Length: 53
Image (cartoon, rainbow, N blue to C red):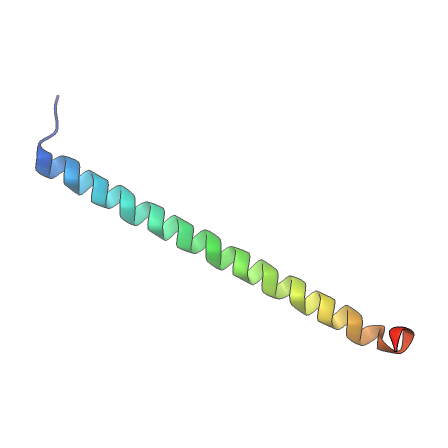
């Protein structure tokens, strides 16, 4: 069964939106992980500052 042009375009748009949403969610997760890593490094440096000063 062939899809009409309108149905194909609606499917393309749906896929675009879902991919965009998934990429955004992945980027947000990466941002949170990087922020935690930076925080962990800052805390480590703070705890050991006298060792390195």
